[in-house]
Image 1 (cartoon, one colour):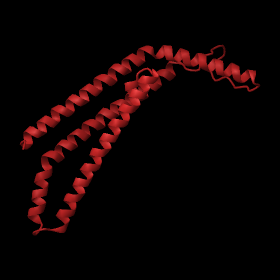
Image 2 (cartoon, rainbow, N blue to C red; image 1 turned 135 degrees about the horizontal axis):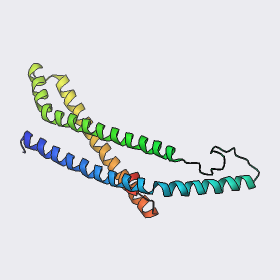
Image 3 (cartoon, helix red, strand yellow; image 1 turned 45 degrees about the vertical axis):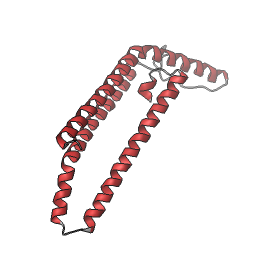
Image 4 (cartoon, rainbow, N blue to C red; image 1 turned 30 degrees about the vertical axis):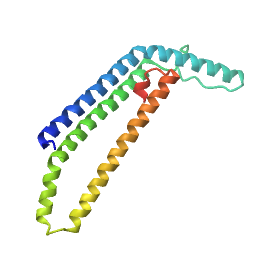
Length: 173
């Protein structure tokens, strides 16, 4: 059995390494995406012009949303707003992840002590202590299964997107 302080240190180092690798992968993907964003915007604008021409050939007219003479639907300010919103969401993700990490470490460190205090304060084999223990084990099982399902789903989506040739498949998966 590993002593609690060493277990906490192992978990802290492991989760920090995991978050570091995730941060590196996501930041590299976002940097590469930002570098190619102009290309994607140009391609999307070309497709939208093609769709507009096809609809007009079919007799469907669409009002212009771009300034006169400008056939680009996506402007640089729209792209910058999108990137800003994405990076804000990414910062929120890492902030929430840090809080979850700290809460998890707190419960790992203090959980056994809290149970000992509760058992001491309850007389004998108190039903509440048994139920809370069962509930805690069920919650741990649920979060563990949820984590496994999410990891398998994300990996599966990434593999499928890689096989389909989608750019930045790891970022989307």
